[in-house]
Structure formats: C-alpha cells, structure tokens
Image (cartoon, rainbow, N blue to C red; front, side, top):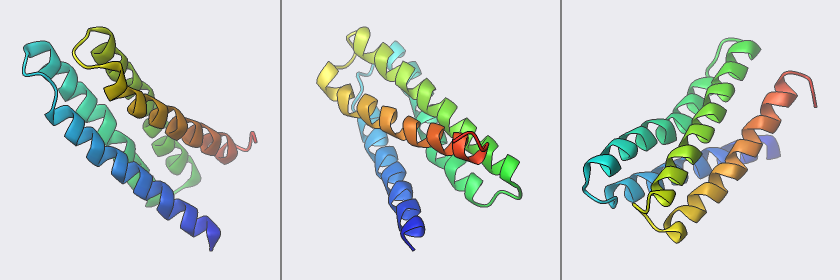
Length: 121
C-alpha cells in the first residue's frame, strides 16, 4: 500500500512541477533567445512526466527502465536550460533555484530507481 502511495505522490510531484514550469515559461522575457530556450525547456521539462507515465504501462522491465532513462535525460537537459536562462541574465537566480533543486531531487529518484531496476542496488 505504501509503495502505491509513494508512486502517486511522485506522480503528483511531477505533475505539480510541470504546472509550475509552464507558469515559469509563460513569464519569460519576450525576446528571441528566451523564446527559443523556453521552447526547449518546455519540451524537456514536460517530457519528464510524459515518459514516467508511459513507463507505467510498459510491456517489459527493459521497456520500463528505458522510459525512466528518458525521464532522467530530460531532467538533465532541463537543468541545462535553467542554468543557461539564469547565467544569460534572462531570469533571476531566485526564480530558477527552486526548479534546479527540484530537478536534482527528481533526478536522484529516477537514478536510484534505474539502478534498482537494473539490479545494481
């Protein structure tokens, strides 16, 4: 029962992250670079939960693991886009710090799950 509850909590966490991400992207400056990076961030950031949900209905353990791998890659890509937005001064550090922290934690959950799925933990 607790395993199912923790899965639902993680799914909710990813969903809430995605909603906050969309709100953040909507508030980016209206310049060309911010739009392009925002598009990339929207793709990678929403891909995290998309691949997680797809993994839930996968047909094999290998398939399930692959979806988690894709989610982890999307986490890492999203961290890059947030860092670029911050370092190029298109957004303030305090506006991206929560996202970077949350992505670190989500990434650790996916990485740990992948190791478990591969029998290395």
